Amino acid sequence: MDYAIVKTGGKQYRVSPGDVLDVELLTAEEGTTTELPEVLAVSRDGQVRFGAPIVAGARVIAEVQSHYKDRKVIVYKYKAKTRYRRKRGHRQNYTRILIQGIETGG
Image (cartoon, rainbow, N blue to C red; front, side, top):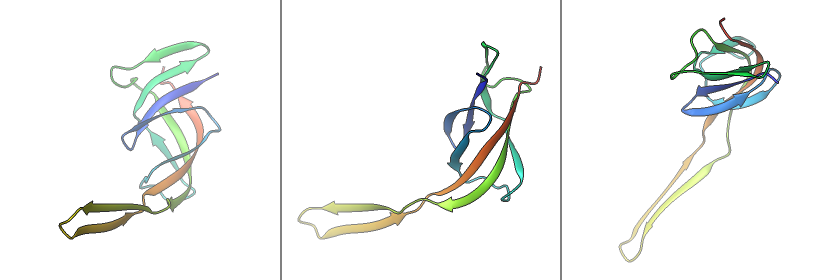
């Protein structure tokens, strides 16, 4: 099984061709292909190559399927006996991508 470990949005993901993945917002348009150049490790035919910190020449090709916002997270700060209350909400933007292929670069 061929797979790669990629880093995007400050997180690391294990991906294989055909995987659908939700990552933090990418700047690519819907329906276009993009590449994830920060490949930390690649496994091909049972051989694993690790980068230091990235594998030279390796990249992951992905198709952008959609952009969406996640559900709202409520952040509430409260201090007792001081009349201090703060309520704030946050909705994170995500991009859904389809992994099309892994190029090892050699």
